[in-house]
Image (cartoon, rainbow, N blue to C red; front, side):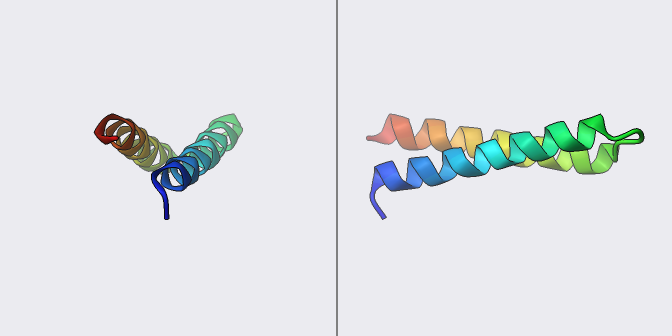
Length: 56
């Protein structure tokens, strides 16, 4: 997998997590534990994107 492919894959995962966070947040009683987990995963992916972009 090329670097560009990896970054695009990470961006797609980041967008999917963002959508999941938005959907969970709109529920009448959002699961705060799930939201925290999704946000943590999203931040980790953002860090991976940044790191991948900086190394090349």
